Amino acid sequence: LLAKYGSKVRFEFKHFPLKNIHRYAFEAAQASECAADQGKFWEFIDLAYAKQKSLSSTALREWAAELKLDAALFERC
Image (cartoon, rainbow, N blue to C red; front, side, top):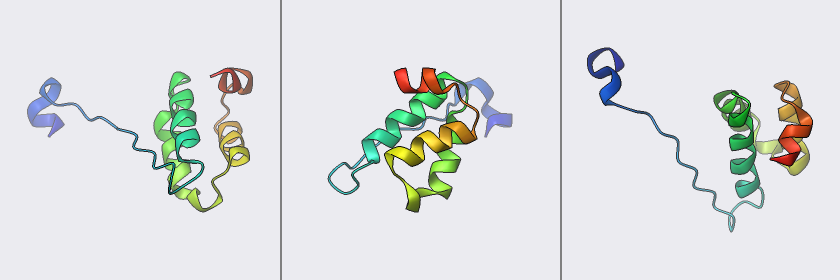
């Protein structure tokens, strides 16, 4: 598609955190946007999906560290 349509198409990721189903859904969506601020959105998303069974507030911070994100900036975000 990109080869054929180039700048005429765009891929968007839309968060749809179902807080009533998963207690960390909204926090994970926010964390991925904080990772995006540091240029690591897709890396964070990939990690979150790969390790979703261990999702927690602590895990989100561990994943940020694993991706070598600036911890202070991530926390402020």
